[in-house]
Length: 256
Image (tube, rainbow, N blue to C red; front, side, top):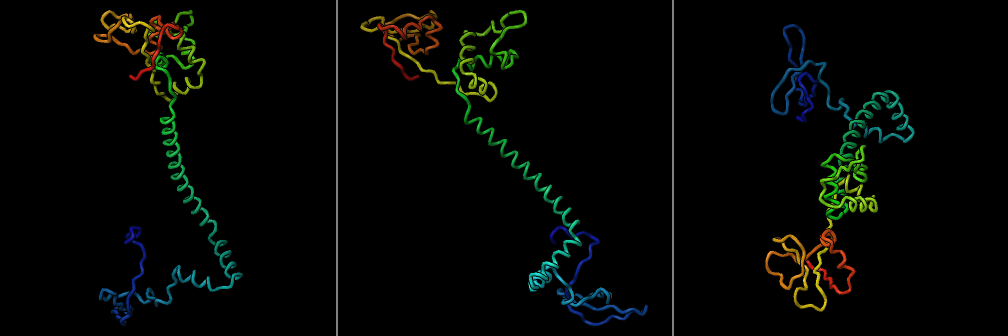
């Protein structure tokens, strides 16, 4: 069974006509032997010769044998007779199929857009990423992040750890990148680190940050609780931005 047949549907049984069965009420049924060997009684009016049953294949085969003009007349007449019903069925079927395909295509486009956004996230410096997260955490909008002042003229970024003016300046100069980073997410730029040395000096010639004393100073040794590789921002925040323009200082870009 194909799953479409239901109880009460009319069916066709194929077999061999095997005689008559005369009933006591005066009626006569036909005896039909099925392929399984069973013999069943069927009213004579319900029995047809096999060559009397017209199938879809029979109709198509016969129409193919017609001359093109006659075949077109048949097709036009059939469509005239059943066109409205057939058209409505085709429309409904097409509409439902279109909805399914439209939903599938729509989901594919959404997935593709999501993948595109993930693969093409803008790259921003760490201090910009910190600023975006701070503003969102404070409930500021994208526009508000460029001018974090309340109606009384008070700053809404007093607790931000970095220089707010530097962040806003970067966001203003790179407005498209900043907006995309705010809306779609971002990747943090891998900051370069530098080794800062005093030219011509052997002792106390390397700029380090002492974790214990929590300050920068020049040292001849990298041993101990010190950091010798600094980002430009770390140096600028500590007041050592001048080293990048000083002729007596050697700046070497180093790996992490």
